[in-house]
Length: 142
Image (cartoon, rainbow, N blue to C red; front, side, top):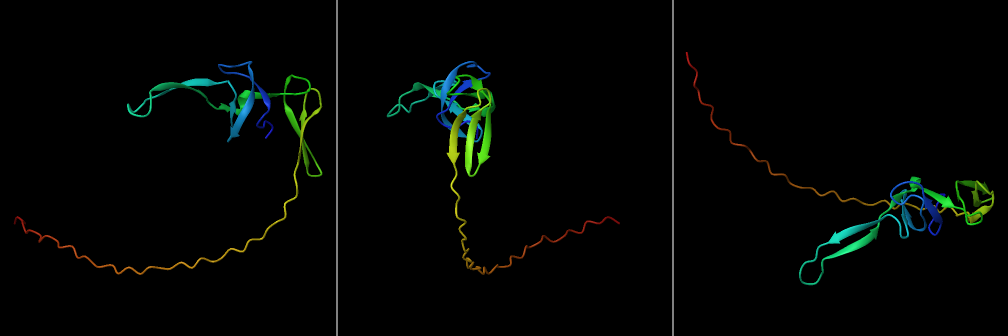
């Protein structure tokens, strides 16, 4: 992905548009940004142990609403990826400087032999149940 955990991002639109924050978590195209997109959640207590309270929770934003802020030029920018010799570089589109270099090590292909599972078929004796049908009444009119 072009946005990762720990990046500084700017929100493009929504209730917090124009604000900047640090990415806390990413999952399935949704991003949680520290201190932004905060909502109140009312929690009801059970009267014994838990107390009723109002919690402030950071809800996830869609990744399309965010733009990465370049650490070198400080401007919101798009990100390009350059791949060379097992290295992946994230590059700022505005200033052209490298944001981050990720080195991918070649993984050895492991061949796993699948063990055949012996499935035991259970033989169930099905008892036949005969339905007793009601005798048909002969009510034919002649």
